[in-house]
Structure formats: structure tokens, C-alpha cells
Amino acid sequence: MAPYRELTEFYDPDLLLPIGGVVYRVKCPTIGEADRLRRLIVDDSVTSDQELEEIIKILGPVRDEMAANGVRDTMALHAGRTALLHFGGTPSLGRANWQLGQLGDLLDMQSILDAAGVNTSPEAAAD
Image (cartoon, rainbow, N blue to C red; front, side, top):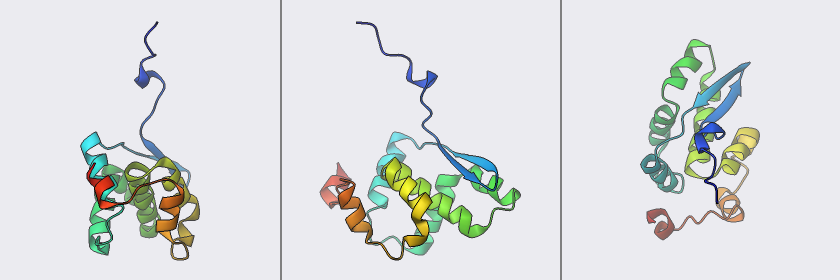
């Protein structure tokens, strides 16, 4: 049997977020960092300040690019939350946040995670 095609020839692991006519590329984290993000997004003890630190970290240099382009703070925060959910949860969670983020205060996120089949138990996060 022939080997599979080289994955890097056709698969882009990064997250592309269009804002104001510019497409921003958020780099896919390493395996270890993605594992940490999986635990983070289900941690109820994360504070607003900690969330901001994580957003700044996940966006990296893209945040500076956004600032230089005049992207509003709330839009950059929305992009960062989307990236955290995309890489720490699933691409579907990231997409839902991107498109429906304004509904976040009205939704029960635990129900959404359950419906998506994401196991949020502490034991699952440790695996």
C-alpha cells in the first residue's frame, strides 16, 4: 500500500480570522500547549485577567498586527476567545463563538460542550 500524502502539502493547521478586510493567521499551538488549553477552557476558576493573558498569548504577534491596523479591542478579544475555543476545544466550538459570540451571555456553555461531545470532567482534562 502506498504511503499517505505528505500532510503539510494540503493541510493548514492555523486559524484564519477575517476582520475588516484583513485575514489574520493565528498559529496552531504545539501539542503540549493545546493540551494545556483543553484544560483551561473547562476551568471555572479562570479569571478575566487570566483570560486576557491567554488571549494575548494565543494571538501572539497577530495582536500587534491587529493593533497596527486599528482593530478595536473588543474585536481582538473576540478573535482571541475564538482561537482559545478552536485550539483548546474543537474547530466547531471556535466557529460557534466566532459567529454567535454575542449570544454568549444567553447560552449555557456546559450544555453546548455536552452537545458537542466534549468531556469536561477533571479526569478527561488530565488525560
